[in-house]
Amino acid sequence: MPRQRHRSPGFALLLTAAIVTLAVVGAAHLAAQPAGDEAPTVMPRYDANGALHLPDDYLRWTFVGASLGLSYNDEPPQRESFNHTLMEPTAYDHFVRTGEFREGTMLALLVRSTEADAMPARHGRFASDVLAVELAVKDKERVEAGWAYYDFRGGANALTTAQPQPPGNRCYACHIDHAARDNVFLQFYPLLADAAGLTVD
Ligand code: HEC
Image (cartoon, rainbow, N blue to C red; front, side):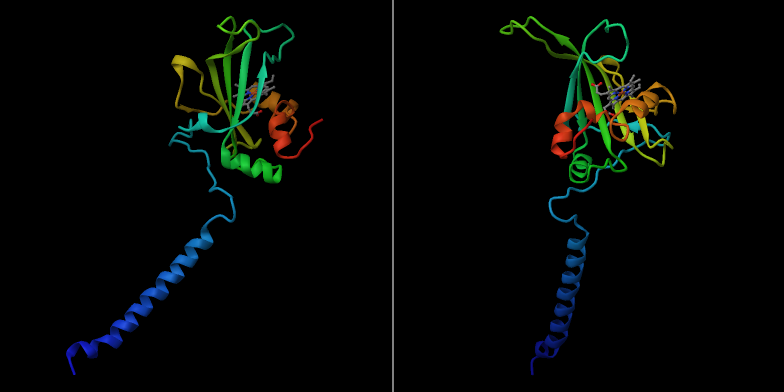
């Protein structure tokens, strides 16, 4: 009998074992994937000093609402702003499905100046320069109140990392007292409320 013949049962056994191992590993891997259309969860990233990194892709987040000239003071603002609110897409999907802002939810507020009189527009105003970039992050491990607020400033001085605003300052106070749902101003985001099938009083 040729020597090769003697080896083949061993090879067959080895091959079977390898196939079984691959199948088991493959099945375990599939089980770890999120079910259905659920995207992997994106969480905030911090540096060694606890400063939040402004996510590189925040301008591509999901648009949830806009406000024009909204001001919190009795006197009208010196400069009207056009604000856009964006939400990290995996937290957005979670909110639309459950009505809950999960831990790690990130929302960005872009404050822009307004302009008018640009051809061919005869009336109305449109968003222009970025005046401020602010983030709200739900992270109970870092802030007892649940949400932390970050100011990245805008324009030429834009920061890529920011420390949280001091707990209890005006950011926290206004959001806790006046926002319709879990610190978030859902009352000004009908697009988000409608997508989640929620009514806001
Ligand atoms: C007096 C009230 C008030 C104060 C103070 C305030 N905010 Fe807000 N904030 C609002 C309102 C109203 C909105 C709704 C969107 C808008 O203004 O266009 C908002 C929206 C936001 C959003 C979008 C997500 C959300 O929660 O609705 C972020 C992020 C944000 N603010 C960050 C900050 C930061 C950072 C500070 C402090 C530096 C701050 N805010 C101070 C009233 C306030």
